[in-house]
Length: 224
Image 1 (tube, rainbow, N blue to C red):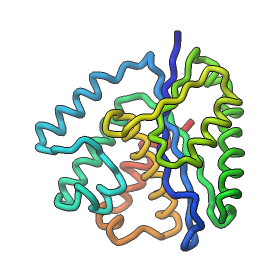
Image 2: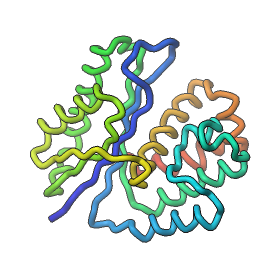
Image 3: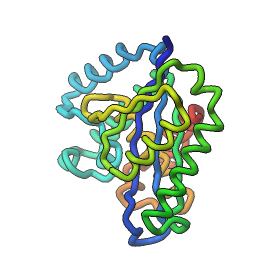
Image 4: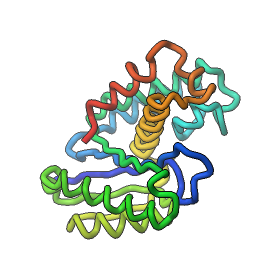
């Protein structure tokens, strides 16, 4: 029996945006369970341990912005974490898709919910052949946003007859961390195109075109 795991992360919220331009992103990371990544997970854990990183969550946004538990880390240490995740990602043979909603076109909760539902259905319909290969589809999300959880359950349950939902914590699932990683990079890609990268984001990717060549180019080839 073939099984597909889907790991979800989001950027933004359902409140009215306080500034424009702004975007709401939902990233889906798809893992075919026939592809065993347990050795890759073990290697990442070992790499973190031997490098002296006592963390349980590679959280890309705070790493870039030097927030939370990463505040005390040097720039070099935070960049090493980002590259460890990039290396892990490249060896896992994953696919992903990010839905992007321009908040200028969805200022309120109702408009955003409607656009998200529509784009999610389009994604599922356009890739029906891919999803139909699997006997079982398990969706992992931390239920951080009730509105998004409701949309995911309603649309995916309608479009897919073999879907199951599980609440999961990023600390326990490396692929939820990958979803966060990809979602953050997709947001940075938008900000780069609009020349809106913050000073901390520019400082993190200090090499010319590093964000585009080392990170965005790597994940772009695996977009569903």
